[in-house]
Image 1 (cartoon, rainbow, N blue to C red):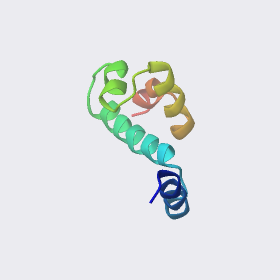
Image 2 (cartoon, helix red, strand yellow):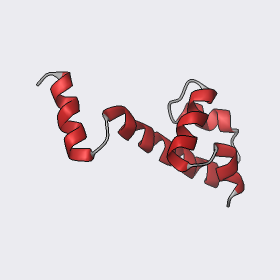
Image 3 (cartoon, rainbow, N blue to C red):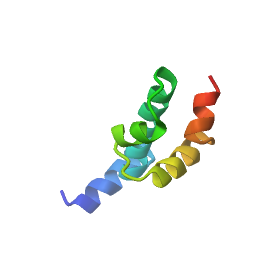
Image 4 (cartoon, rainbow, N blue to C red):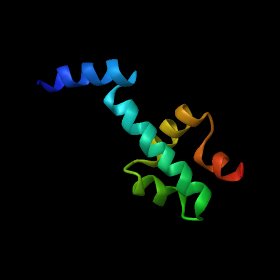
Length: 75
C-alpha cells in the first residue's frame, strides 16, 4: 500500500490526518506532564517531540483552547 493510500484510509477510519492524530497524542501527554510535575514547559515540549516552543504553543492552544501555561495554572 502506498503511503498516500494509507493516509486516506487512516483519515477515513479516525477522522483525523496522521499528523493531527499524532499532535493529539503528543498534546494529551504534554497536558498530563504539565499537571503532574513542575518541569519547564520548554522541557515538556521537547519530551513530547516538539522541537519548537512556538509551534508547540500554537498546536497546544489549537487543541486545548488555552496555552500550556494557562493549562498549568488551571489546576
